[in-house]
Length: 90
Image (cartoon, rainbow, N blue to C red):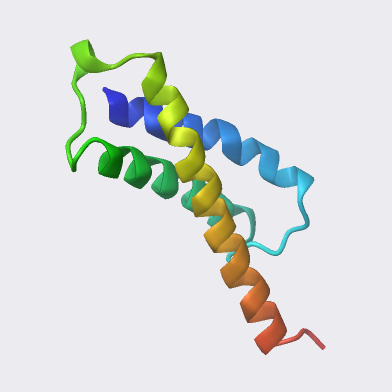
């Protein structure tokens, strides 16, 4: 159940990607994937490569996903900027 919480927080934070310039790798879809995968992986790593069940899920699980979503989107943003600098549009 915590995995669902992590993914939903990642999606919620992804909505704020419209406030930064679109330099994400693969555009807004890349930002979405970065937020979702980052939030899930971060929560998964924090809990020792396990996903807490329904009875072990609380409000803290939602807070745990925030750094992962931000890191995931930052990585996708950095990759996009790097590709734009290597292959500038004409």
